[in-house]
Amino acid sequence: MSDLANYQYLLIALIFVWSGFVRSGLGFGGAVLSLPFLLLVHDQPLVFLPIIAVHLLVFSSLTIWMNNRSRSTPGEVSAGTVDWRYLWRILGIMIVPKLIGVFGLITMPSDVLSAIIFVIVALYSVSYIVNRPFRSGSRAVDAIFLMVGGYISGTSLIGAPLIIAVVAQHLPKEKLRDTLFALWFILVLIKMAAFIWAGVDLQLIHHLWLLPCAAVGHVIGLYAHDRMLRAETPVFFRVLGVVLLVVSSLGIVSVL
Image (tube, rainbow, N blue to C red):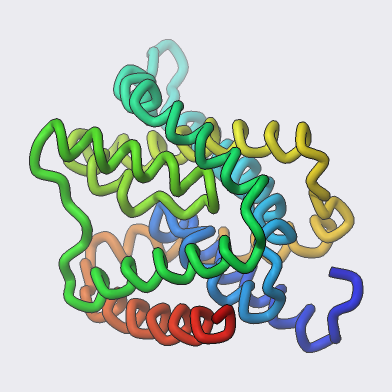
């Protein structure tokens, strides 16, 4: 990323502010809602995925720690904000597809991976536009969604909507967000281990300026989170879906 123009660095910084915002504001989306924009600036997924992975590790663990610390009171044992029993159950379903996806990421050409990312995001964006997010209806469909979501997470870190389609039906609201954060942490830890094993450049120098950018978005997202959940504004997601559809369509054309 050292050969980019100044305006490209500025765009990347703004996109990572957006990434931090949607991650803390929605509870997911730090990758799926920012990768299409990043790939339009610099079409190299393996440049951005390690950066996004580190940001997720940092902010998911920080959010869980802060939430559990604020809930704990002297002399009282807190139940915690993560449903670990349910988390281990779905991990058992997702782990093999996840590892297969990680292997595919390491061996797949960057233009093919970019095309896959854009197509997946286009499908997600249509579900936002028509206000019909992915939902499962049975245990068999749950397992399929989790396995496909695990595989997509292994290839590009953007399997969240399929996974949430299952998890959101089985967890109480007060435990949903932090359980998802714990899940993302474990899945991304596997991916980071694969990156290191395969010798992928982790872009460590760029964390010095992109981590603060994501932190700014993270703080803004924390303030917006409660209001967005209470408002339940489908208009926001429809506009977001239209923007993502346009961006992903442009990305598909550019790759082809």
